[in-house]
Length: 539
Image 1 (cartoon, rainbow, N blue to C red):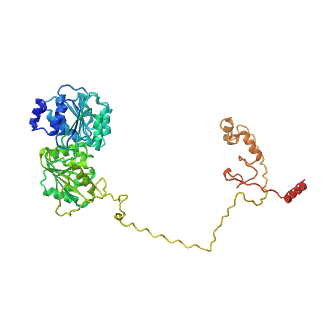
Image 2 (image 1 turned 120 degrees about the horizontal axis):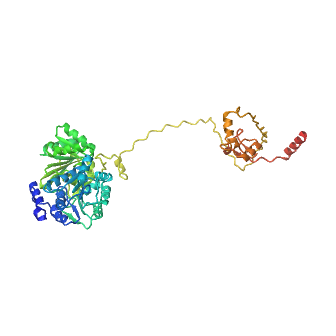
C-alpha cells in the first residue's frame, strides 16, 4: 500500500515524496482513511511508529478548504510537552508546505506577545500545551468555539504529568459537534475512561500491543552496585559503537550530576530536563540533532517528544519506576525499521521494578557482565525509594530476622536507697460527715464607718473626679453600679461580697471559690448558761 491509496491530495503526495516517505506505517494506513471520513479515532501504537503523521496528514487535507478567523482557530492539537508540540509543528511545516495554512505554536517559555500576534491574524492549526492555552483563554486572547478538529496526543503522558484536569476543562470549552482524535502509546483503564468521555462512537485502531517493544531493539541489563553505575555506563559507551544515545535518569538532579561526571571524563554530552529555560532546551536539541553532541542525559518528560530516527543507543542509568516508561524509553531507538540497542543499569534493590517490566513486556531482559565490575543478582524482596535509592526502612510485617539486632538500651542509673531515718509525712483524710471539733465563735466584725467626702467647689476638685461626675449617667464608676446591691454591701460592711455568717476564709476579702461552708457546732447547756450570765453582767 502507498500513500496514493489512502485518498490524499496531490500537494500532500508531493510533500511526502520530497520528504522520502513512500509507504505508510500500519497506524497511518488504518487511521488516515478513517480520519478523512470524519469519524472519531482512538489510536494506540507504540512509540516510533508514525502516530504524528497519522493525524497531521488528514488534518491538512480537511483544513485545505476554509479560512480562519482572528483568535478563533479551526483545529486544536494538545501535547504534554514543549518538545512534542514543537515536533508536531515541524511536521505541519514539512507536510503542508504546498498548502496555505496558518499555524501557531502556543507553549510556555516563549514570548506571549508574539504568540498573541499570531492568533490575532487567524490560525488554521493551533498546537499548544494545556497550561499556556488556558492562560491565553483566561486573558481573553483566544476563543475556542470554532474548533472543528481536536487532537489529544500522548494521552498517557498527559495522565502521568497531571494534565488531565486541564484537558477536561479545555474540552468543556469546545463545541459539542467536533471530530476528536485520541492517540496514546498505551491504553490503560484510566485512558479508556477519558476516551469514553471525549469521543463519540470512535473507531479503535490498535496496530501493536501497547505493552510490547520493537523487535528491532536489542535489550540487555547489567546488575551492579550503586557505586559502580557510572563506571559501568562509561565502559558500555566505550565498547559499543555509539553514534548517538539517550541516557535516562529518574530525577532531574541526577541528570545534572551524571552530565557533569561524563563531561569530566571527556565525553561530548549535553543535558535536558524540565527545569531548563526554553532557550537552553532548544539549543540542546539543536546540538544533538546536528550531531554536535553524541550523548544526551535527560529525564522522561523532556525526551518524550523528541523524534530522531537515527538514534543508535538508549541507556537506562536508572531503572524506571513505572514499567510503561521502559517501553517509551527504548522506543527512542530502533525507529523506522532501523536497528537499535537498549542497555539498562540496575542495582540489586531494583528487583521489583525489573520484575514489573519483564511482566509487562512478556520477556525477560538478558543479563550481561561488564569487565572490571562485579556482577550481582537482583533482590526481588527489596523495597526501593522513588529516586533510585534504597528506602532504608524495613517493610512492615516482614521477617524480623532481616531487620538486624536491636540496639542495646542504655543502662538505667541505680536508684538511691531511701533514708529510713526520714519519716514520711502522713496525710489524714477526714470525711465530710464526720463529727467536727468544737470551734470558738469567730469574732464579730464591726461595720465600717461610712466615708464622707468633703464637697469642694467644681474648680477645686481633681480633674478625674470632675470628668467622672460630669458624665452623668454614662460610664458610672465601679462604686455607682448596682444601686440596690451597693446598699446591701455597705450595710453588711464586707465590701463587694455577700457571704453567710458561717463562712471561714483566709484574709479579709478572700475570693468566693475557696470558701468552705462549715456548720457551726451546737452549744452545750453549760456554755449556754455561761453566755446568759455574761449577758446579765453586761446589762
